[in-house]
Length: 327
Image 1: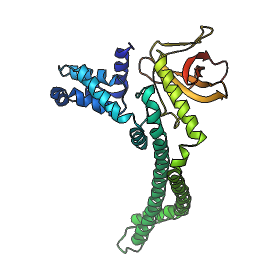
Image 2 (image 1 turned 90 degrees about the vertical axis):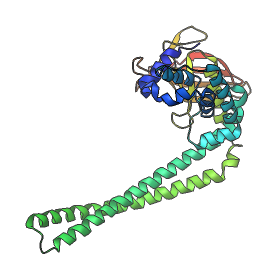
Image 3 (image 1 turned 180 degrees about the vertical axis):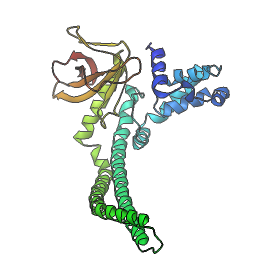
Image 4 (image 1 turned 30 degrees about the vertical axis):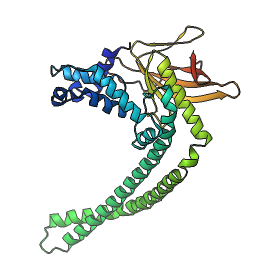
């Protein structure tokens, strides 16, 4: 069994007090099936139970693990389907490999196009926000100009007020042209983002038949198979740079070269995906990761990698680790 105590401690250190997971009222209600269903449908890891149990322990309330597990399985039944994956991706959630190999293909078939639309929609929303901010800045300068002119026409204004108004007027006039240019630039980017979103939506059905989709599907399937097969990996996800995977390596866990026995990485830390290569006709592939060590006391991940390793696959099955000679 994996080192749950260290994982729960890490969650407390990084995410605040464990009692935030469940309130005293929720603990006393004792709906552990409902809690498990909620966590399963939300794609949370198995250790969510330990975090909830720890929170209720602080309220002197016990936990019903059996009911929780039954609820979690029911929640996963809802999540681990193509429609469930699509909704999960559209919501911008990051998949943690909880569906298992038997149901992952269907889940990813919905998750990938849903996540693709979410990314395009998020880019469009960001462009809209940038445009709105540019318009707001320009309007602010125009309001400053209007108020300054009103003050300069005020016969009762003091010399100090007039001096301030002239200064404000000059400042706003000087910056308004740049703000108006920013509006034009932001409007152009918003138009591009709108077009990209429309293209993403209209091409979604065809995209799932594309080589890009097939490559992403295979890459994520392999990565989660690696996480399930190797005891050093807590989980892998794809929230680092879009679909590119990131894997969490457990405290004191070692990734060892399958042929030489050399130690490639020691946890805790993050393994970040760099690239994937595939040998046609042989069904063999290789994923290259950089390793970023983490401080075991606070979980802070180093900014620079301390090495790396390759993960080997044969027809999608995990086939070992090789220390990377050069990244």
